[in-house]
Length: 258
Image 1 (cartoon, rainbow, N blue to C red):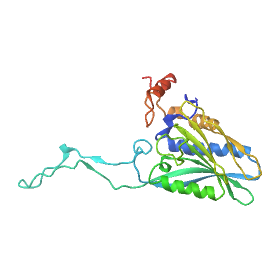
Image 2: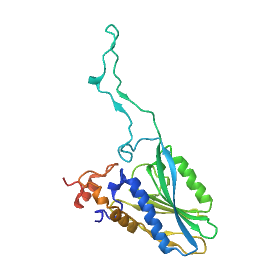
Image 3: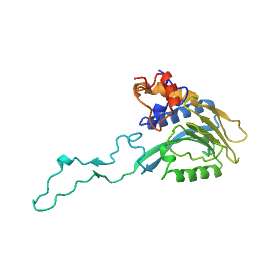
Image 4: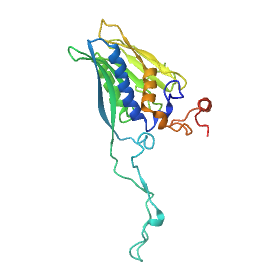
């Protein structure tokens, strides 16, 4: 069964996103392996970031305990009658323990020298807000000045995008391409109503670009992962909220109809 959405399915932006993110990276690798010549190899790597901001608790981290409310009826009375009765706490906060987030990166490398040519990052919310936003921005600069082409696939509406530019239109999803050695960024901006793009993937000079069909990768991901069994389209999508006009459009797709 296919997703009712023409591009990114916003219902995948919640607790399903880590599975979506890793599966999409694998399917991107599969596409590229089929299209690249024997001069290149494609690796799927991961790096781990510790997330200490808990804005995504209940959205992407549903099992993380943040606090425990105190049941006033269960609080014991003071042990000695002549001592003042203790005022119950409002809540009990556990120690803040970082959540380890694994972020996939698809790497195209030169077979002969194992040199990194192109990196494809599928962003997580940890890349899009503090404390992880600034280190990620520094990393993307190192990649660029290291002579590596960088593609960023941002399929999350939450957070601040690493690329800050006044001419980027307001959009739900964004794909960017920064070619090594060129001071320009190509981008594809999409709303929830738009299909995902087919984009160029630059290689080592003088080889011509190959292509990546993100829409096909997302279609394969949804169908192979049987995400229709995990999503209740009668519920509202994960935050942030959509506009009333966008919600009415989603209802024409069969969402939020109950």
